[in-house]
Amino acid sequence: MAKILHIFRAPKKRLPMEELEEVRVIRDVGLEGCAHGRPGGGPRQVLLVDRETLEAMDLRPGVVRENITTEGMDVNGLAMKQELRIGEVRLQVSEICHPCDELEKVRPGLRREMRWRRGMLCSVLEGGMICRGDTIEKVSPPTTLPFAEDSRGGLTAK
Image: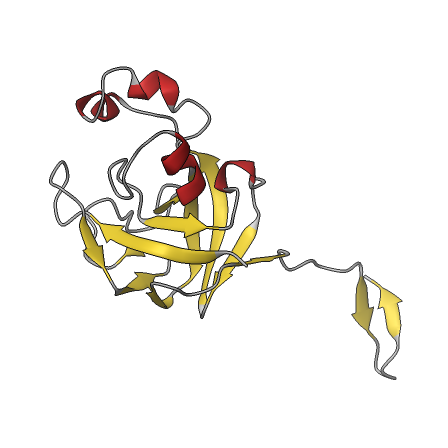
């Protein structure tokens, strides 16, 4: 079962990430107190990276500036629009995180090495608290059926 291994936030842009045991995740923003949060929405609110990718590349959790390091989930294989539930928090995978020049400060050539492996960016659909060790569940996005309930309790086409 997939779970949160580490939680990080950036108190200020370009400063080292701080590791947390728990944090409040704010709807349409990101992690409370994180300089990379996107007030007012947007696709780049929370960055997920899996431990397995970091280990394969000989990188420490947090060094690529992810918010959540997962274990037991192929983050890079998640589909766009996939919804994830972590306790009361619901995230939606919104885009691939493309490596930036900042990764070159970690190790020369890392930007190129991390192409298609940097993780996935998510938007926050429902906020709440998350903690290290919380399970991560893939959930289907809500679907709208082409039916409505009629006055007798039956279904009719919309």
